[in-house]
Image 1 (cartoon, helix red, strand yellow):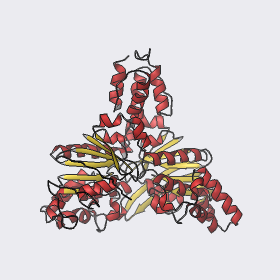
Image 2 (tube, rainbow over the protein chains, first blue to last red; image 1 turned 135 degrees about the horizontal axis):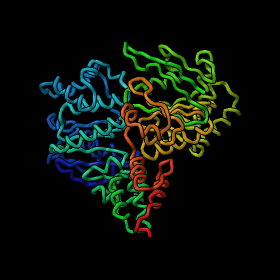
Image 3 (cartoon, rainbow over the protein chains, first blue to last red; image 1 turned 30 degrees about the vertical axis):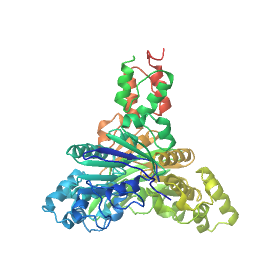
Image 4 (cartoon, each protein chain N blue to C red; image 1 turned 135 degrees about the vertical axis):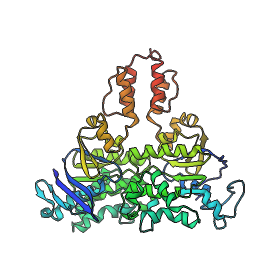
Length: 256
Length: 271
């Protein structure tokens, strides 16, 4: 079985990209291909303009430039303290100022350095584990960041803080590719890729992609409430397609 | 009724729960909210009897958990976050039969319970399927069926939808909603959208109960929302904006009720 069917795709430097699809749609496989963690059975993947003989010969410098957060990051914990867990990659890549880097990336992930650095990652709550895993990717300051469902398991406030931070991070010429089940999260993306059964259905702006409400529902995705409602209203009269509640309400206001 | 009375719990010198009291009533959908690390899972494990509180007690229908013994374990089921971690057999119906078999029930009784449990969660047609071929939502429903086969009075759902896609989330939440008509459900989440139908809502912050009341009271209490690290779902924001414009919005806040509220506004387009 092909987890990902033939597709061609170019992701530019600095892009902010959402990858969506139901469970088993091939999102994670595509993300791992993008990260150079697996090689395609057919076709090629280029990183930074050239084909590397990966996975095994991908140079360490290239590896450092691509950060990857796994879907169940807590499965890969091994260190005795949060500090060692987060510092591991930085030390391995021979980076300097490890302590500062660990501190900064923990704070970025929303955990206090002083409170958490000496704790065992295994005794943390589910959401705290997610944050440690994120910090352990951020510690190398990657140019390309690929995140497999980064906000799953985070509480509301942590989610919001995380997305705010990620937006800022991506503004600094970094490429961010995030996988999500939530089309509400994908609304912010410059481009949304929709996968279903390994096939790329859409690769376009959220506005274009979200206008296909029925197709999205059919492939197990749930459009945001504002989009659902404006879609229903559009059946009865001409009404603009809204992606957010604010857009929907301002369209209503223009009509009152 | 399950009564949690003044329960505290500490680990490695850190206090995780402090004087927590709450009730879970039969036939009700009780929600426990709280941010990451608030103590939600620890409390769930104490209510299930997997952890012993440092102080305080848990009673079921007036009897203390310890005194109720195995009866308590059978009456109170728990569904965890990760569907992969709570399935024991390789075929759907065998997994559901595992619990009743261990109770030493007669084959006829086991068959009857497997059938009714699988029908309740909508997996009867998939009873011969290998469990690895199920989706995440189906695996969680299978876990629920395994609990139902023990004829529980209470079911705890500890972030049971956190790792599922929207379809799976809906399946599990709908199943829990139906079950809450007959058993007592404790639904643990940090997603306020999943709490909108709660009969009673508790919020935890750093191991303490910081709010107890209705969902409507909770979402209009910014301090409690803040302490629970909760954010307002888009449905609620939209409902508030529509109310300000004179529309009456019925609960629960779903697409149908919101659409009804919008069409009740005097919109030019729809004249």
